[in-house]
Image (cartoon, rainbow, N blue to C red):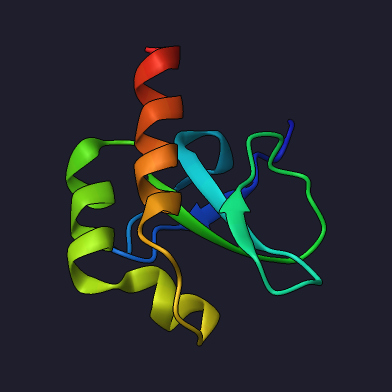
Length: 87
């Protein structure tokens, strides 16, 4: 039996399969970006792919808390664009 990695959304706190999330990563240079490969080096934070969690992440500054630094809201906008283009 193959074990599927689980992650928790930083907004709704739901645990799901890793593939069901958008991963944000803080790189060594301190910049935060969307990690489409879900394998980039650095501190990661996961948000559900549904639009509600992305909107709430932006509204509540969830990425700021996860990375303990100010994060530009354009990162979340870019994640929405990527997610919407894939679906």
